[in-house]
Image (cartoon, rainbow, N blue to C red):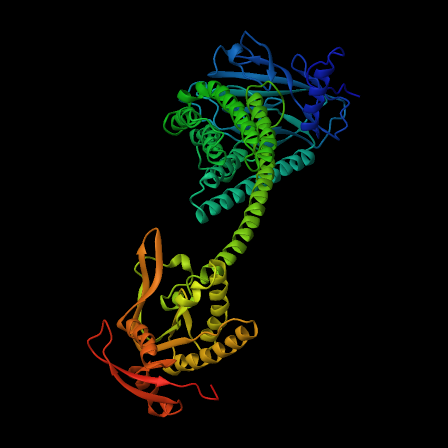
Length: 628
């Protein structure tokens, strides 16, 4: 058995370090790290069941292996100290030992190399990444991954990698290499690709979904920013995962790929700052947005318009900035919880997990830990918590909507007691909220005025409470009669009624007769209760009137404006002069026609010139028949 262990050594006196390394083992399950020491890896007892990580100390020469200055260098890692710069070229070498019967199905999994490389196995070139060159002019960088089949021989086998870097922040072998059976490595690569594509699909769909939310409700901009965060981290997962955009789009050059790597990081920070501001505006300090726009915005512009060699040195300060802003976000979320903002607790839990993956990626980029890149997966987890927050908000909003809907139904029912539904219909409005000052319509109608005779004398014998009870008792019997005959009460004038009949003229006449019958029944009830009986006068006139709203912005009322209203009111007043109960105008008789008018007991009383009219009114008296 070969000695299989975690990368590095564990001190038995440091239990915390043990747990941390066990955590890293869980994250990298499926791949074990053999001890690469002094540029040698012993696989003489390897059984082929697991893939092996080639992390450890490789031989490294700043130039060719034959030149002086060869030393040990950690892989993955940067060569800055050994090469005295991130730029330059050098050669990594690793001796792999096999038994006398080496495995036949053997392969090497190649990650991204910074930034161009030629890979040799036993002095045979097996793969080129970009074009390796000893000068910037001769080098063509490329971001590429692959799985290469190798033919091992018994005993020693030499793996050499010539690497050139001219422009990236880090040079050398910055990712882990793995060896194993070709089938196993291809299977792991396929699983990694599937996971990357799955995460990208999830983030892409969620990004489009949040943009759709913004499109339906542009007043809330938080879904817009979160949509950008989702799409950017989805693309970032393709840039850093086992499948790269260069595999899908070979025409993308190295500069473009590097811009995507940096921009997806800086722009994500920018849009997340805007997202937090719009989700928790009460808890977000004023300086948070300027700080976010200045830091993340400036670095994003650098990523867009400047070459990689210029902005890559600023990555480490920007990573510290992102860490500081993440801590500020945590403080904001704690304040949001204290302010009892909806969803803040779930949001904090999700963000802590997401922020942990961002910290992981920053530490991974700087070679502090050997974990994979986790921020896309972290965002998916955060999306789950974000979805729970949205579900909670939508549930509460739906409950509020139902509550407000019930309240509006009750409110509309109450308002209809003050503004008749028929008024809305005539003004062609579906709801009272649509009515505006000055809305009006013109239509022929019959107007009826019904008033209690000698009400002033009657009210003097009653207390205020008795007055209101009497009036409401009287009107409660008369209002339904008007509605049963196709009319509606426009106004209650103290002890009187003003009713409008938009239909046939005889509807108002029939209603007046029915009102007289209802009054007789009411008087019978009053007599039995020991109260005095009452009398009522009714006047009806038909003509064109204008119905609309009057008043001012803070107080409006619906009303009718027309000579028709004045004539009907005057007719009601004439009932006292002629000592008749119901008077109708000649215009009303004409509207009913001779055939219909003959069905009623009417008596022509003559012409009367009433106040407010120059043209005299033809006045007819209507009597209550036995069939009324």
